[in-house]
Picture 1 (cartoon, rainbow, N blue to C red):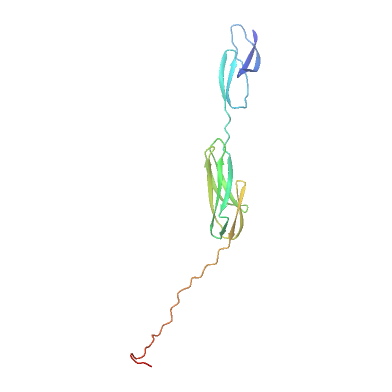
Picture 2 (cartoon, rainbow, N blue to C red):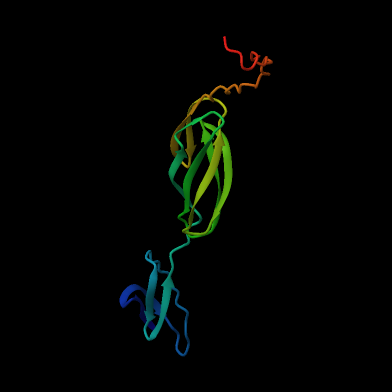
Length: 178
């Protein structure tokens, strides 16, 4: 015979199919349903019931950067500037990414950083610049600046010169007054 087969999801009819079933036999009925929200769904067809769990697909590793600093903001040539940035993996899977530091639009350093899902860490670079000027560091779409002053001239250390020879003072005869 022929009959209607209503598929229900959480008690609500989601689809209906016309089914022709010959006497003393059975047929397979196939339904396709899609749900956008993650969570459990109770699916039923007549007296048969099952729970289906829809899960959100895993987002691959995705790095986000924040809080870029260059400290101290001013140094003398040859002194170190410490550049730090917070790297976070906001994805659902472990991943690695090269963190590339540029200074005045040129690549200056890189570090490969691996992070678990939803984890973060501070990435640190030490930069020593020998020339003076204003410098702009960029990393992860963020920028910071620092200045380098010329190194002071070396201070001359006086060398000890030999003292001129001294002549002993000559005292007059003892007991004689002038």
